[in-house]
Amino acid sequence: MSGQPNTRLADLFGIAGWSKGELARLVNRQAAAMGHPQLATDTSRVRRWIDMGEIPRDPVPRVLAKLFTEQLGRVVTIEDLGLVRHGRAGRRRGGGGDEPSDGLPWTPGQTAAVLTEFTGMDLMLNRRGLVGAGSALAAGSALSSAMHDWLHTDPALTTRSPHSDPPLHADPAGYDRYEAAPIGSQEIEELERSVEVFRAWDAARGGGLQRKAVVGQLNEVGGMLTYRHPEHLQRRLWGVAANLAVLAGWMSHDVGLEPTAQKYFVIAAHAARESGDRPRAGEALSRAARQMVHLGKPDDALDLMKLAKSGSGAQTLPRTGAMLATIEAWAQASMGNGQAMRRTLGVAEELFASDKGDVPPPSWMQMFEEADLYGMQALAYRTLAEHDPKAASLVQGPAKRALSLRDEARSRSEIFDNLSLAAGYFIDDDPDQADHYARLALVSMGSNSSQRTWVRLRQMYRLTHQYARDPKIRELREEIEDSLPKPVTKPEKGTSRRA
Image (cartoon, rainbow, N blue to C red; front, side, top):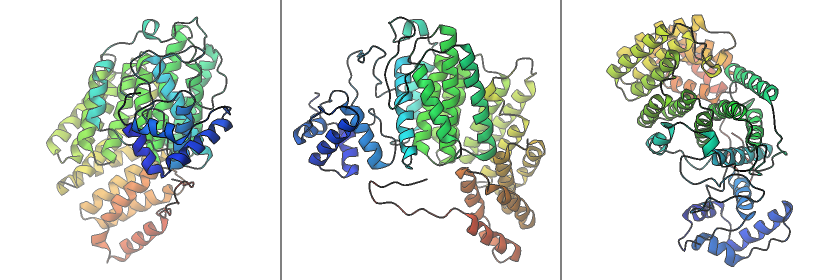
């Protein structure tokens, strides 16, 4: 007991709207349902948790996390509730790793524990039709400061691993998890192939359709990581976890679950580092940076990009460096820094051209091709045009080049290219061409589950206002208004809600 109020728990308790007595009754009822009928919590104990900082024994923290998750309709972890014990290298019953701490970075055991807990709660929300949406977005500067020193050192799985028990010993961390078992190289190969399937689905149809499957697969991999496999298998398994966590984060971002997405990107960075793939960790952080630009926080994005680039290390291939540079350029464009944006796009082109292809790119970089380089250039110029309309004419070249190179399976990227072109033409005072490309985007959007495409469509729709008297544009505006998703009425507290 710290003697100090648990402000995290107090804040969430206030949002949930329970009385202390009501929460005590709910804890007892839920604990019995989870196989702990002997638990007897009362109002005074709840008061000590909140007002005195007392941390209850297991399973109460897990019970509280489940109750708050269901009540608030978003993922609430033990960490979010401030119920993590500090000051000791605690071990769970049954052996296994140390408990996850509030701060960053995490040990391997903490990473596996956070992964299994967070995915388990996310899946529980999915089963109930709720929305996984963590507590709040951390600023880019806060993440980069916390992770800088850790990302710049190499992990040593054999010495840093929390598992001091013999190999193939399981740590029962997490929620609703099957009984994990040791795996071999064949099973890991199958997992790696499944990542490719999920990645292709996401590129073609958006993140909404397969998000739950990816989160479920990641939850299972978290269970596998609670065994201490031979080091070469353990590193590959961490690599699978990193790839799945990036996908889970990107799919969450694609459907508007922003704090949840950021949590997955952080988990991915930790998993990638444990796999020994620092460039993968940097790419995971670059996803968080893209998210920040999307949310109108380009300064936070630049903070994250500094860490992503410096933390990727000497293993970074030129194509990976080009991809990182395009994201940095987009952030600079969002701030109206045209000169810096152009310089950074030049760096991206040089890096991409210098990639001789003699070193096969990792699987996670195969989604950044020449079309993506031009697509990001078009997006940067389209974004800069909001600050400097003269940049609008420069959208056309790279956007059309991107469209000519696009694989048919990359329909979401094609939608973005068409929207960049339409917006560029509107800003450049060419409504006829803008109408053409806006309709091309609109045709494909109905079969795509990406909410980000609708966000970009709304951004382009704003530009149609000055041409609303043009019959063709008036008709376009009506079609857009009819196609935009209708707002969902806010549910009463404690009821289910959907994205």
